[in-house]
Length: 309
Ligand code: HSE
Image 1 (cartoon, protein in one colour):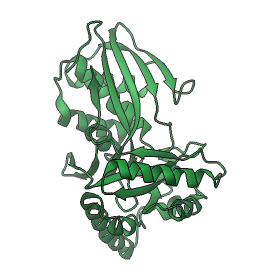
Image 2 (cartoon, helix red, strand yellow):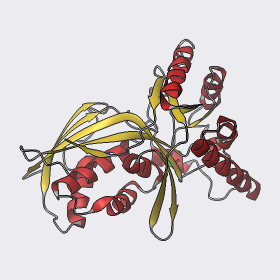
Image 3 (cartoon, protein in one colour):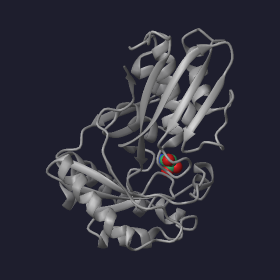
Image 4 (cartoon, protein in one colour):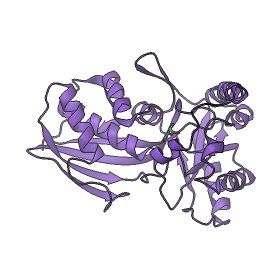
């Protein structure tokens, strides 16, 4: 734990893409696009936000970073503490790239830093799942790499490093879509045949990512549990996937609840994957997709949330 001379702690937390097609509410991948946070002990909560979300995110105690810090202080038996927080946000808010998870994980890691590491990673994960409501983005943001979550009465996560090189091309929407409204589009029940379809695809995806096998990753991204139901809220989903695949991506999926779409690129190492992701991004930009920001080539973050010196 690094505690600065000034008494502040600084944390860096990665963006994440969740679901990856077949792994609804289970799979997550951390991406090298970051929110940086700094916190100083203070008598009351105040938050300064620069970058993504500046002007729209709360600057008081309702801010998610502040709420997560308060939850961590309470869990450590130190309720009543407060902080001044500064956020330098690189993760677009409300687009399906894990901005709320990055804020929650950031707040928890900052508080744990100010507490001298009293809570530890496992407890931080439990708190993060409680605050976020589902585990996939928070697991990737906290642990880095490719994460698979399950529930044994308590939330669990396996952190798996992608084998070989992996990068993504994120086609971010200009407009946000709330996760809560995108979850309301999902049915209570799904046909047994669709569940069976996803079992096979999810198994393939884990193999494709951990073994570095794009021939398995491509079909492994197939999904019948959430993407078809969300297409109404993301009408250009199929068109953006087609553009990414035409440009050379090994496969594409809705990022989390959307509306961002990610293309996946595998090569023998991360540098080669990132170089090919950049080429794909430059081909996609030429297609000037309406309602979409310029595509972003992103490396995978293999480290997860960390305190900075
Ligand atoms: N698994 C969640 C969902 C991710 O699809 O609603 C939200 O980012």
